[in-house]
Length: 163
Image (cartoon, helix red, strand yellow):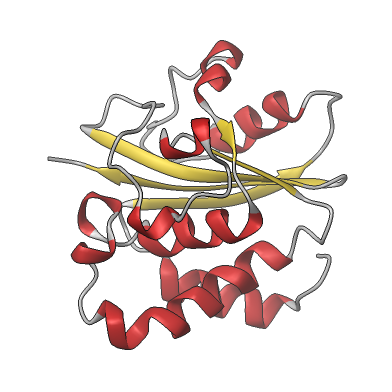
C-alpha cells in the first residue's frame, strides 16, 4: 500500500461497498494496465466481468482524482447518483473521506479511469452531478466504476444495477 494503512483502508471499503459492488486490487504485472485491470476484474464472484475483453477498455475515460472519489462515493446509491444515497447531504463529507482513503492507496501519481460518459468530454467534471450514462462493461442493466492505476497496482471499484 502506498499512503494508507490496511485497517483504515479496509474500514473505508466496508463503509462504501455492499453486496452489489465489487472492489479488488491486484499487482501490475504486465506492460498494459488494461490487462492488469482485466485480471483483477476476473476475481469477481458470479462472473459479472466474464465477457470483458481488452477491447472493452475503449469505453473507459480518464477522470480526475476528485472525480474518481466522487464516483466511488456514488456507487452505493441507486442508479449511482447521490439521490439514491439515504441522508447524503449529512453524510457527504464522511463518504467522500472514505472514497479518498480508498484511492490514496494508489499514490499521488495514480491515474484514474471510469466508464461514466461525463468524463469522456471533461475529466474534471463534477461527477456527483454527472449525467447517468455509462459505457457498460457487463450484462447488468447498468454498471459504473473506477479503475485506479499506479506503478505497482491496479484497483477496480465497480457497482451494478441488477434490475
